[in-house]
Length: 592
Ligand SMILES: *[C@@H]1O[C@H](CO)[C@@H](O)[C@H](O)[C@H]1NC(C)=O
Ligand SMILES: *[C@@H]1O[C@H](CO)[C@@H](O)[C@H](O)[C@H]1NC(C)=O
Ligand SMILES: *[C@@H]1O[C@H](CO)[C@@H](O)[C@H](O)[C@H]1NC(C)=O
Ligand SMILES: *[C@@H]1O[C@H](CO)[C@@H](O)[C@H](O)[C@H]1NC(C)=O
Ligand SMILES: *[C@@H]1O[C@H](CO)[C@@H](O)[C@H](O)[C@H]1NC(C)=O
Ligand SMILES: *[C@@H]1O[C@H](CO)[C@@H](O)[C@H](O)[C@H]1NC(C)=O
Ligand SMILES: *[C@@H]1O[C@H](CO)[C@@H](O)[C@H](O)[C@H]1NC(C)=O
Ligand SMILES: *[C@@H]1O[C@H](CO)[C@@H](O)[C@H](O)[C@H]1NC(C)=O
Ligand SMILES: *[C@@H]1O[C@H](CO)[C@@H](O)[C@H](O)[C@H]1NC(C)=O
Ligand SMILES: *[C@@H]1O[C@H](CO)[C@@H](O)[C@H](O)[C@H]1NC(C)=O
Ligand SMILES: *[C@@H]1O[C@H](CO)[C@@H](O)[C@H](O)[C@H]1NC(C)=O
Ligand SMILES: *[C@@H]1O[C@H](CO)[C@@H](O)[C@H](O)[C@H]1NC(C)=O
Image 1 (tube, rainbow, N blue to C red):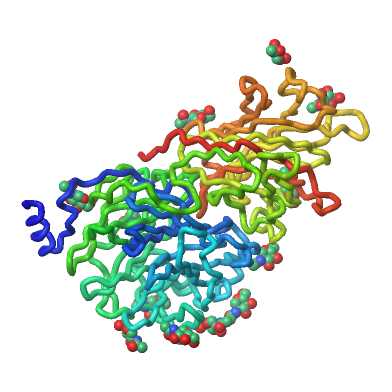
Image 2: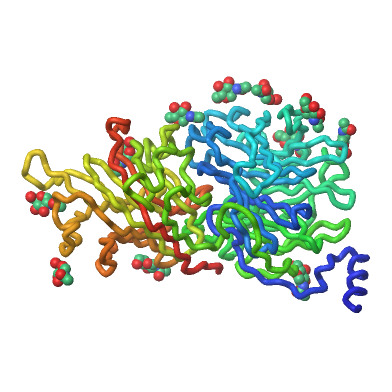
């Protein structure tokens, strides 16, 4: 009775009911790994489920959707982009900063909408042709196949976000390119046809920080609130707010700006910004944004920009108050634990043990770099049950200059690194036949940033025979904007003198266990050994995680196959690699 009375009193003052209950504690990030630019909604009509979308840049499938009923357990339920036909141009973007930028998820009258931008980040293009804005729709976000083909609309800029006025008009608010005349612009859009209004207006230019972007509009207590990110997505990142009585402005800034940031602090969680706000079933407010676990040094953050959550207090007529982002958080009582969530993918903290059984398909949390050539990935081909056959691409993981690859594909499939400490391993059967044939495992951030342990067939350059015999070597190499040591070559056979399967250079079918382990906060170790004897595992090399800490994306752990430039076609397909027993084991998540 006392609680009920207290509840009414709280309501009258506009204080959310949740103050009645004990607060919850939880830890950030809520989606560890490469899940930047979050946008989240709460959907009462769908059994009070929360849904979030993330940026995916060049990876395919793209635009992952997570769902939760308790804010604590999140499942990857679908990918908005799962069919190459939805967006063929994703195959031809250049640079690691291209691809799918911030997606906004919204629910309106029974339909889920994703509004997003495919960016062609080529410096030559600064006009609208660089920004391909689009809308996807779904009536069942638990199935990737439910997401529509996009409707494209003409908007010079990015980070577009829709807002439905009561009269049915849909406003699109986005970011004008920062190199030209930065600011938040707005027009109207027809979501069915993509037709945009003729009046593109600047509604707010922010508080003076670099790159005002990531806008969202909320209507509360007679005010339109416009929340944006400023400062660029690095150490100066912050979130700012303004409000207006009309949607088109003028917008007056919040005197408390920035409303959330970790800039100029020594926090482990940095680059806090690019936020979205939503309300749980108890009417308590929450927010999500991106953050890097880098500390102010900003040198080691291989997982890149991750999704964090914070509680928000938003009383009637007042500006909202956002709690600062930390690793250990306390906030409103969360909904009761509920793990019954439909969907196609794993929970965010799950381990992997993928055995590629016949008639299965690749799990939806596995991704490629740009649109894959499907024939390069065959599960359980004849004679090789419970394996994934990787057919090599002509291009290696770097391809040309590290920026371009084009539509011919780079054979690679990986999963996001989601833990500071982990062990990732596969078994690989590989019979390299021609010089340059290579297959192995990689910590892949971008074409310009990856650390690889492969087996590659190369000529023995110290041999006096002519031609020089081809020998399989372990090649351990790092590609980075940082200075890296030259590739290390170690002959495979000489590494394991005891194993007949590996001891005769005329026997070239190699059966190897390959492992990547994050041994501490700053370093990965790459190891290999004969499958039949784990005690003979050799660590071939270690490399700093700083080599793969850069830019907009986060590390992927995966397998690749390439001929290193030799043409691949039906008469010369290159040596396949058969991958089995794919494992990822989380071993620790640092939050301070
Ligand atoms: C990407 O770069 C390549 C090579 O420099 C160029 O030929 C191509 O036109 C570029 N593509 C786009 C979409 O900018
Ligand atoms: C946009 O930029 C491209 C590349 O610089 C140029 O070819 C094109 O004419 C421009 N289009 C408009 C409408 O300005
Ligand atoms: C897109 O909008 C711009 C600016 O309003 C205009 O110049 C251009 O012609 C439009 N492009 C298309 C394809 O409609
Ligand atoms: C629709 O509502 C918006 C927001 O209230 C208003 O600005 C706009 O003029 C209205 N449009 C029409 C066509 O009534
Ligand atoms: C924002 O900046 C643009 C481009 O520089 C300018 O045209 C516009 O007047 C500014 N708008 C406001 C509201 O300050
Ligand atoms: C969008 O365009 C279609 C086709 O012209 C039209 O039927 C529909 O009414 C428009 N929607 C809105 C909200 O104006
Ligand atoms: C951080 O400090 C710099 C230098 O004093 C200042 O320019 C900037 O506005 C500060 N950023 C925030 C978000 O407080
Ligand atoms: C519960 O969390 C909210 C949101 O962070 C905060 O405002 C409130 O002070 C907390 N209450 C207690 C008792 O800690
Ligand atoms: C390469 O050739 C040299 C000279 O014949 C030989 O000593 C060495 O063992 C060979 N290396 C490998 C990996 O076969
Ligand atoms: C394996 O090979 C190493 C190096 O040649 C040798 O020292 C060791 O005794 C061998 N072990 C077995 C079990 O044969
Ligand atoms: C992590 O491991 C590497 C490689 O063994 C070592 O050089 C480095 O000092 C270690 N770092 C820490 C923080 O222990
Ligand atoms: C990777 O591919 C590029 C382009 O095909 C080639 O120039 C480069 O030598 C290859 N790298 C290795 C290590 O073979």
